[in-house]
Image 1 (spheres, helix red, strand yellow):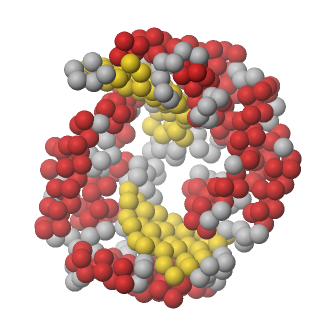
Image 2 (spheres, helix red, strand yellow):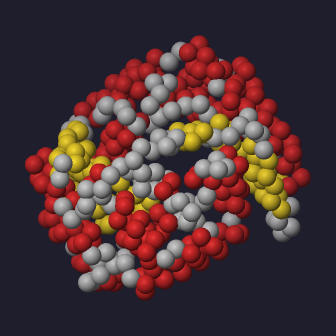
Image 3 (cartoon, helix red, strand yellow):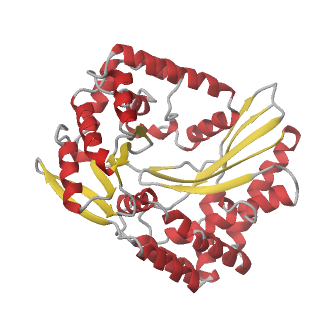
Amino acid sequence: MRRIVALILLLEGIFMSATLEYLTIDTIRVPIIFERDNSLPIAAVQLVFQKSGSIEDGNLSGLAKLSAKMLAQGTKSLGNVGFAKKLEERAIRFGVHAGTETMVLEMSALKEQFKPGIQLIKELFIEPNLTEESLQKVKTTTIGTLMRKRNDYDYIAAINLKRLLFQGTPLQNPSEGTVESVSKIGLDHVKKFLEDHLVKARVIAVIGGDLNLTEATEMVKELLSPLPKGKLEPLPFYEARGDRREHIEREESIEQAYIYFGSPYHMRIESPDLYRSKVAMFILGSGGFGSRMMEEIRVKRGLAYSAYSFARVTRSHSYFTGYLQTKVENQKEAQELVKKVIEEFVRKGATEKELEEAKKFILGSEPLRNETLSQRLSRAFNEFYSGKPLGYSKEELKKIESLTLQELNDFITSHREIRELSFSIVTR
């Protein structure tokens, strides 16, 4: 096991580690995560706008994602087609997307085309293509996608589960919105959302590639120059409910029952025990074949093709969840088995064999998660965003390597709240 960790550290040592710098622009201290990598003549940048995702939708679910799509429609002068053509001519990759907590704008290109790419994004900030024509196009596409999802039973079960777990919070609403909410979004809503959230105070810049630090900071400064200072409010944290509720939606035409489950998970992203959580959740349900869920539900009883469970731990919320599909007639048995597997796991913990297998996989697959510049920058960003020092992942690997069964099981048995399961089911 120690050889695996040593190999990981050796491979990571081949690349320059990411560094954290701060750039003051208009009295705003903007964090810049930078890594130089001149193995290829390419460069990439991400602008991550904090507290700018669907958690900020308010009464119009889907607003953040739709605003991100609008930002991707190019500049007013060039239009969507003209802007896309400029990107294509220079082989520049560009995209905008919104998650739960953040909105991310990203661009990558050959080094010689990186500065023109920076200029294109700067022009996008100055005159985004926020027109009624673009809005109707984006809304039509979005509504069409949402209507197709009415027959996606995994999607239906998943969003119903979020409503059960986070009722009364912004997280109860589907991040993509609904047909009704998207229909209500007007151009003024999008303009106001972008004005409030595309601001210097919310930005974390992530940049790297065949650049030196001076070049990188100058490009970030240039890129952010059109944006207003703005402000960043604290990100709230929402606890999942543990009142063991159940929601069943019936569809006469289906042959499978779609079972989604979730419960509270008292874990924060800054917790020093997060590495123990990673190992525990791998053993219980996120490790694929060999995990408790898969072993008990598929291998031993053949009740499902696959069965997974895992923990979502973010800055705004944390919960335990999982899912499986089974024949309609096996729904109740599968549901009770999920409860039993989790109950036994919390009561007895893991075995020595399970711990060793989890360590081998997590440590052995680590080099594959650090092969590319993009992967390494993403890891550095996640460390910073979760309040950890850059390079913390290496320390986490050492902790996983030395984790004892007693330490792991003490952690598992202390999280009895994951037994407080709510179920969202689509069945016949």
